Length: 77
Image (spheres, rainbow, N blue to C red):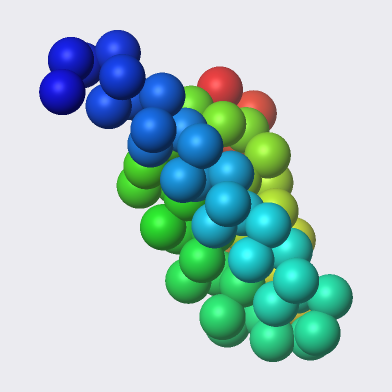
């Protein structure tokens, strides 16, 4: 598969995973949401929304060190 096609399929898969993460977040399953946002980041790490959403999920679990790391990364992007 050409690199561009692989990148496009990763972006599409990352978006699907983000939707699953959003549903987990809405269901107050914050640890699951973090795991899913992490998978999305692994596929498409330049998407600021994934980092910001994961930071917000960490906030809900009072994991403030992780909040700062993810929020800082979101700002850098």
